[in-house]
Amino acid sequence: MRAYTYLSEGKFALTEKPVPSLLKDTDAIVKITLTSICTSDLHIRHGFVPRALPGITVGHEAVGVVESVGGKVRSLRPGDRVSVNVETFCGECFFCKRGYVNNCTLPDGGWALGCRIDGMQAEYVRVPYADNALTPIPENVSDKQALLAGDILATGYWAAKISDIEEGADVLVIGAGPTGICCAISALLKKPNRVFICDIDDVRLDFVKKHYPSLIPVRSSETAERIAAECPHGGADSVIEAAGTADTFRLAWECARPNATVAIVAMYDSPQVLPLPDMYGKNLTFKTGGVDGHDAAEILALISRGELDSSPLVTHTFPLSRADEAYELFSSRADGVMKVALDPSA
Ligand SMILES: [Zn+2]
Ligand SMILES: [Zn+2]
Image (cartoon, rainbow, N blue to C red; front, side, top):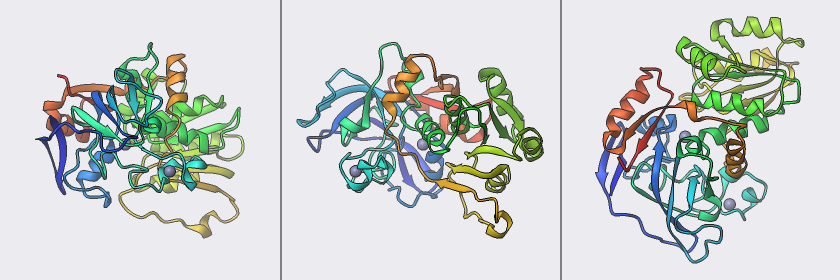
């Protein structure tokens, strides 16, 4: 089969690999019908993800059809349409029992697919802990609608969940890329007063205006002033930082009102400074990290009921055979690109 592979730092290529087979009785094999490129894939290519192993197939966001299941898999059968989770997890260790599946301590626990083991930018993938890592897709939800449920929409949903957003609150999301928008539309589910979303890129702000009119797009350069002027307590009640650029960490805590929660879901290329003297007395709560992706069933149910829709974010689709071109477009940010999907059947 064809698989898009991390060869060495700076180098991905389409390679031929054998179709994977079941290795454990908790595994499933999934035939991929649609997969997508994530900024984390670019981070792997740039060598920013030390855990990523050269030789692995990349890709950690996909939907597909179950091809076969191991003897201990209870909730799935061949033929089921499923969303594949970015994280595979046992469900039984110290962290999993508390919902912190990103830190599952088993060998294939946490972000393994497309990082430490073969991922989903391929025709087939072997999925460990299939009962936890695969979620059936409701019949009325298309592949495109479900595509982001396993990774960036899961991230947005989780970010909104950990941000202590109260009904009627003012929320600021930093970054109007795909992840930021997923955070913002998930924040809307909490019935806030307003969700502001800022970016330096006018194309992205126009995208928000067009597809998500309930969000309030703001230019990054005007954000601090506008938030201070418009939010009644001197800042946003909850801030979600999803941009990960040089100035955005500072912008995040500066725009937060005293006693706010600031959730950092961005993946930075370099260390950030936490200037505690400058923020003394503001009594902020910071939350950081990578998604605990175990809400796929809830997310897919919301999509099925029309309450959550990330499908406009999938702006481009390429056949898997043109993955090089797809990556080029995704990393160039040209042509209004948000998310690029890869279709292994085309
Ligand atoms: Zn990702
Ligand atoms: Zn676990």
